[in-house]
Image 1 (spheres, rainbow over the protein chains, first blue to last red):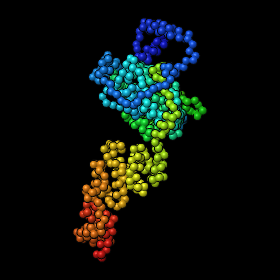
Image 2: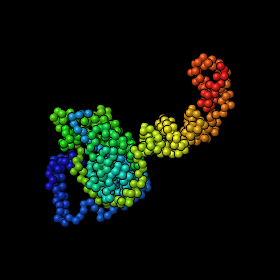
Image 3: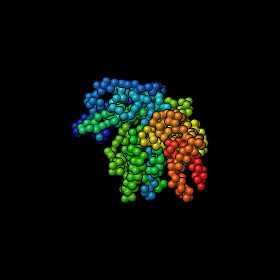
Image 4: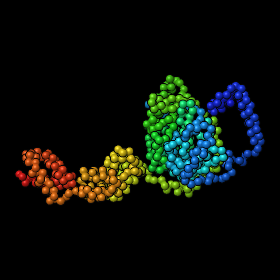
Length: 92
Length: 472
């Protein structure tokens, strides 16, 4: 179970400021999510490796040949930008 | 340095691999340039875009690992390292955590704990109220090399890094330029009282932008930690930034601990398998390493330790030397070494040009040295010819021919020059006959001037003496 301290730790890492009310709401919501995930615990996972999650047994590499992609197409989806850069809230 | 404490240093070195494309997408892998000109759906983390591994990265990483004597893991795993910072739009960095590509190597006397592959992050530029994100560097290929915590002084840390840089440059893995950021280093350092004590609490030093700043930051940190310990205090485990202006390290915001990164295997990337055949093939691309080559330059070419060291510092220079030596011959190795490390290096430095862009072909420098050794051109003429070679890229033969610069060795011609100078300078002749033999130098100088530097100075010297004797 998560408590208020866990929520405060996560908020600190994510650089979020939460009100007391929000802390209660998120604690409850996240606990619901965890409870749901805990149903996986009922499954038998003894023979399943955590290191081979894809079901494909080896990586298929590509050749080292450059290709250009349009900057405009990528930037078109940005919620905020200047001429050539994405703009985000200042984080230091 | 405090003699009261035992210093333990471990290094984490990031090296930007030289490849044509990024680690997981086909965007060009070039540093600098206009922001966001080398981005695509993969390196900007668009929904549904999947990483595809670059085979050249595998080659370069294995080559680097072999160069520092690491054991290659035939199976390694990519993991996601989650963190909150807008320099990576996926919100995680793909790296290798539990199973790296290589482990357990050594370089010089220092053990290497591991070498793993990971992607670089983008760059943030902080402006007034916001930050601008440039993702050109996002997903560029890096290797991280982690040493064992067994380095015992800042000087030793600096030596290790210089050695590592030289070897990786030799192998062609990276240009390892700390100023450009293609080699970056973090250093962990702790102090303890006795050899039997467990390792002390460490601080992790960042923002070390040159070998010099690595050494200075470690020196400062030894002082800081030993002051804390001597006064009965406790060192806090933290990340500290080196400040180049104040020459101090400063504590920074406590960041994520390993647990907070929530590492897990990347479900988009199956295990990376490397066969023994491949490792053996890559090993054939390892060049002769600097130390071995230096020794060979001493034993095979009869060079001094110093000259051999200078010439093998960079692989391009050593290659150039061997190429030129084929033309001028083994006997001229010392003269060639001097021309290469003084004249050529001097010109290149003055113009800020690298050896690979040297306008003088190695064979041309070799034939210039051969011409000098055969007495066809004098030292002074050779310098003029060389200047011309550097400017035009022409061969010395071509320049000698064109300028009519060939050395004058004919007795008749030299006689004529000398007789003229003796006739024009009766005062010098008188002084010489009075026993002031030092004036001979001035007369030789006159002859050289008359012959536009082309007369063989040794023969001029002999001829002048012979002619003056007749006056007696």
